[in-house]
Amino acid sequence: MREYYIWAIGFISFGYIIVMPLSLLLGIASSSLNFYIRAAELGLVLLILFFSVLQLRSNRGILLPLIIFFMIYGFRLINDVLFNDILMIYQSPIYVLGYFFGLTLIPVIAISLLYRHEDVPMIFRDFLILLVAANIMLMLYALIFGNIEGGNAFSGRVQAASELEGAALLGPIWIGLAGAMLASMLFGILATRRGTGKLCKIVAMLLMAIAGSNILFGASRGPVVGLALSILLFLFCPGRIMADVAGGGSRWRGWAITFGIIALSSLIVLFSESSIFLVDRFAKMYEEGLTSGVEARYIIYKTAWQDFLSSPLIGTSYVVSFENSSPHNIVLESLMATGILGSSFLFIALWRALRGIIRLLRGLRGTEGTCLALLAVVQLAMGLTSGSISQSPGLWISVALVTVMGTPESSLCHQAHNRKRRMI
Image 1 (tube, rainbow, N blue to C red):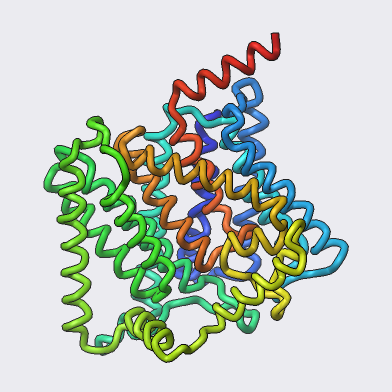
Image 2: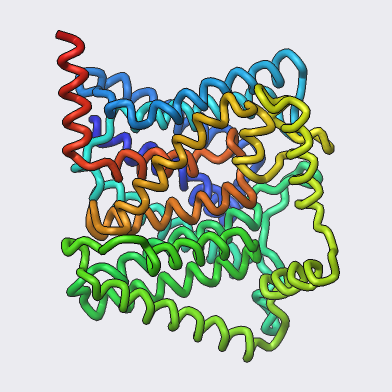
């Protein structure tokens, strides 16, 4: 029963981007569907924890800083939502608190109690299957409901509007992020796995094309930045890559794949019959930078920083004072909501996650660990450009996983031994 937690946390991370486009294709989607999907995911995690009670063991405190930060942030959330009636538009108390406590804190605790190093191949397999399914569903939705006539496939952003004005059942960021996450894992497979057959390579390249199309359909800049950072970190990862991945040759394959991606992307831009909206957005950002133009996002960043400075020790609120909005940056949100007191634990947790990512990229858990580390880099980059602490469960699941996966067995055993001695 314990092993089923992998499917549970996988569905929390990626289930929505499978079920929602499928329901849109079937014509049964509604804003309430998200609630039922998330409630089922939470119930599954709690059920697995209940039936695995005899197999529980703490993962040696490696996730303790992250859990402590969540506790501090949770107090802020309860105070703001229940006592000060602070909510972002279209949100309710059960939505905000349920997302954070039910779909973020509890899954991280479940990982701490249930994870074993032998789970890594299953985590890799299940996450890859779910992301492939998500990208296929999203591409089908884009092809059927997107504006693809007359060579205009990538000239806009694909999304599904909600019955609530200004809201979306399926936002473009989700579509782009799904593509970037799958592309990062496929890059890791092609770059590090030796002896991959021709059929597997063809399938991987076809899936890479689907992932790239979804990135263009979503036209969000964050997923592109996240994918680029994951590839760059792989290519320039400090230290030597362990021999059990693919030796030093994996970096050469990584460079070859990177140049292939750049060349293909350039051809698409050069020979496209119409403008590509994602490219236009990057061009506009560059032009505004040259002319000292200011995007709304930067105004929010500046306001969030001022909110932090107004109460640097314990923070002020989980939302920016500017229109009760999200700061779209997990570090700024942490400083703004929990101050230096809470953020110090977040910084320790992120440092441990980054250390785990580096070890995984060096080959500590083989190809599977490398791919999951690349996936985590994409999600962390999104957390710094479009993410929210309380509404990004997939991000924190990945942070928790790379932290425990990137901890050497000897270190874990040493901590477990010390704990037993203290108990005696």
